[in-house]
Image 1 (cartoon, rainbow, N blue to C red):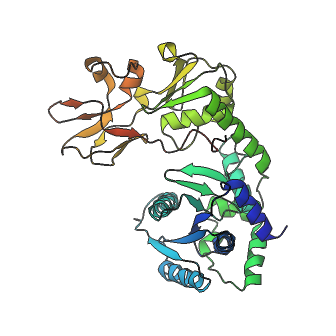
Image 2 (cartoon, rainbow, N blue to C red; image 1 turned 180 degrees about the vertical axis):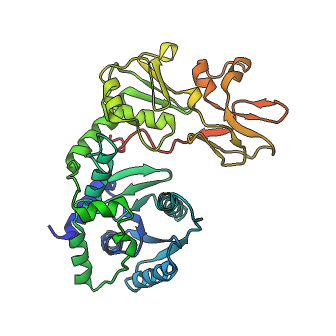
Image 3 (cartoon, helix red, strand yellow; image 1 turned 60 degrees about the vertical axis):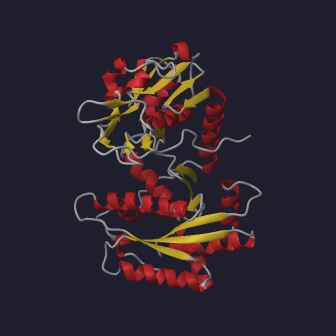
Length: 384
């Protein structure tokens, strides 16, 4: 199958039907993301849609800024609009991890600000194999690799090139007469991904059909058997759950970016029972309904933060109103004993809800905060 056909087939499986496709694109200037930009531009233009290339300038190498401008110029020659997003990163430990997190945040915020729901990335089949190998080294359960569809904050990440080999992408660019930037860090053995690539120790990922089947099963279960509430808890009307569905709910209620270890989730999913996993308490729902309650473990909540507008606390709640200076935003905790009943909720849930406190011991509950977990519960969108 030609690269263009594989790309079109992947996008048609990832995007909603009947709407002009609008894609923001994460473009580094390398071969993979440059191919993504050309493919997406042709695809969207032919269907009445639009693209916007987002070029992150990390500033980690002296030539990074020049390469970002060069990439923007090359895209402009092909009629592809772009924006350069400069980052200011301080030196120190964990620089690559911090750069990756900053890049993801900058891309997502820029895409949302420009009115793009979908953000496409250029990960290909070799990236998938390397990711699988890296995750496998950290324990069992890494064989599924990166998803082709994943919600991240205000945008949805799409990876339409996971089934395409990097050599095919370079061949596509050569046929189109398009040049790209070579990043020397892609050959540095200081990075685990490069060592795996050079040593040929990648592992074959699970096929996309297998992952899609699991995600659809999880979404179907959650749509039929789960209730998620704005106070940050869930009720499962079931005595067992598909492991992917249970893992997704625990990740969402706990505010995490990653679910608990798969072995622990599988052990619990076959027969729900009182337990604490991933910073989430699981216990009978009682007066909240049949089934099982999943609520944030109060002892696992993050420390209080300064209560500025849009402050994030516990990776679950965002303050949505301006409040007086000098207040902190944190868990209600033991003060739940001195507040009036709130929505008929048990103390376990109340203790993990956000409250505002002043230096003199003043308390405001509930705080004007909105439940906004880092990731949604459904690994795929619900289907009618």
